[in-house]
Amino acid sequence: MTIGSTSNKTPGLPVASAATGPAVTPANARSSSEAAAVAPTEASAQVALSSAATSLLSGSTSSVEFDSAKVERISQAIDKGDFKVDAGAIADKLIANAAELLKKSTPES
Image (cartoon, rainbow, N blue to C red; front, top):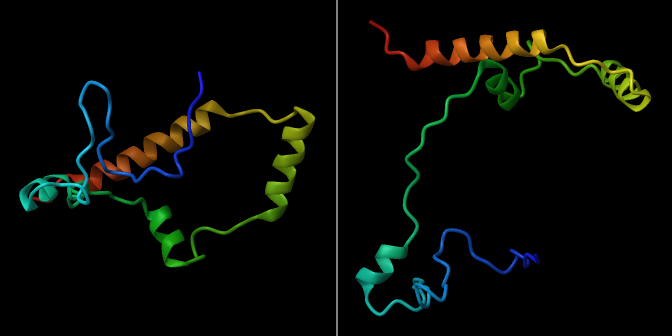
């Protein structure tokens, strides 16, 4: 199976197929209403960031610091095959992050 390059495709526009016929794009639409029907729409999804993500975006280093020595130790352990994943620690962090998100998403009484 060969997959072609996606560099020449415009995201968000319909793709033509043998079953559906030629794709309608704003450039080849026959009427303004047809062009409006294929025009990009506003996003409706809402995203909530964790406090760690918010502090990273704000450039604050007060709560999150980069430890290059730790990164080097982990990198060497991975290279040697000695790195062990602590599934319990990962699960605890996922649960804590989910709890934080649930607190933010519930309306305050």
